[in-house]
Amino acid sequence: MKRIESIQNSFVKHWKKLVLTRKERDQSGEFLIEGFHLVEEALKAGNVILTLIKREDVELPENWPIDNVAIIEVTGAVAKEISETERSQGVYAHCRQPVHDETAQTWEKLLFIDAVQDPGNVGTMIRTADAAGIDAVILGKGSADPYNPKTVRSAQGSHFNVPVIRGDLTEWVEKAKARGIRIIGTSLEDAVNYTDEQSNGKFALIVGNEGSGLSPELLSLTDANVKIPIYGKAESLNVAVATGILLYAYSTK
Amino acid sequence: MKRIESIQNSFVKHWKKLVLTRKERDQSGEFLIEGFHLVEEALKAGNVILTLIKREDVELPENWPIDNVAIIEVTGAVAKEISETERSQGVYAHCRQPVHDETAQTWEKLLFIDAVQDPGNVGTMIRTADAAGIDAVILGKGSADPYNPKTVRSAQGSHFNVPVIRGDLTEWVEKAKARGIRIIGTSLEDAVNYTDEQSNGKFALIVGNEGSGLSPELLSLTDANVKIPIYGKAESLNVAVATGILLYAYSTK
Image (cartoon, rainbow over the protein chains, first blue to last red):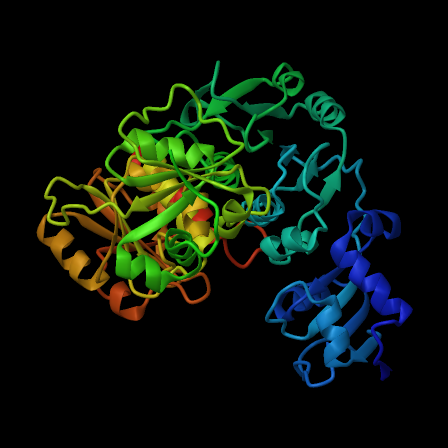
């Protein structure tokens, strides 16, 4: 097994940059994941792990399918260098970002995310979309990087289950409309109660920025706009919670 | 206006401890909030702010009802000392923790939180409970401190709108049952689909720990256990998202 002991090693420098900077992730098309659960999900997905990295004191589970996986052992100092969390489990994987066929004509349930900035929110939304059986998640301009370590941690491995694509939401709305998919926006004004919207199972739900909501341009393209009623005194719901309520309302009908 | 320039000042030391330690919050029955939105919510609530604290360069909004509020101005160094966020807005309030009449017999919609550990999750759940018109939130043993700065930030001021109480959930379940309130647990086993549960508007929903769910003891006390179906490959939903889906399913019926 290959072993790395120095934090000056060029692999270590690259991994660390993958954790810290979007630029490195974007330019390489790679990202780093951390922890037993995420690495196991990546192994199950297949074809995403470039290198599995383990701290020298860590035992890998015997049932992991790692016969054909490159493994590098690292010292505690190197592990600390690439860890995103304080209490690291000492297991990591250097992954390629999944590439998806964006012309897939079979997708009927879509989540469009317009400028949601918090990585934890975006990750939770990817996880929720996976759970709700959504076919793909499209992240528009201004949204958090789906491969930010915080996004990846919140998504709990759902990146490997549901296509997550960065794109121009206006174009995606038009493509979806052309295929007979109903475009449902979210807004506090000129919107119907979400329970009054009838989905026939083919929909694209658009959710917007934590503070300002959907852009006016996108709002002008929707077939319907829905809102979740507020029964108490809160001004609004967290965007990931709102997304969960709406996705479950429409995907179960 | 009183002014504090030294981080050695005893007020500053107390405020900092309120941010950093649960012990200080529990012993004093106080907490510190930060940011224009939260301080405004506290002002609206009335009777919670002991002292409003502003950094010397910060202008308070003219429409804030602060005629009868004690205000202390602090230097940038002091503000930095008590800030929880990196980019602080420079406005804070030293608050007393609201005390509620726990014998309130009019509460018909309750959220019981069993050992949810992440402060962000607990805060988001308090915010969601407020939005859904829940009458009170009860936090059982092992749950994050509702007055942890992260909890408070995630709740976005809902602490001032809905009673948040720490208590023994077993006792709360028994009290609620005695008043004819239906106890709905959450579980992946021996549970019905949540859409099959009919609420008559009087319910206590119990949600559990991020990893292990509800304690067996609480599960044995419920009238019904519900689950949210997973249509994709995700193993589970985030607990705050799941809580949102369930609270809206039952409070709108």
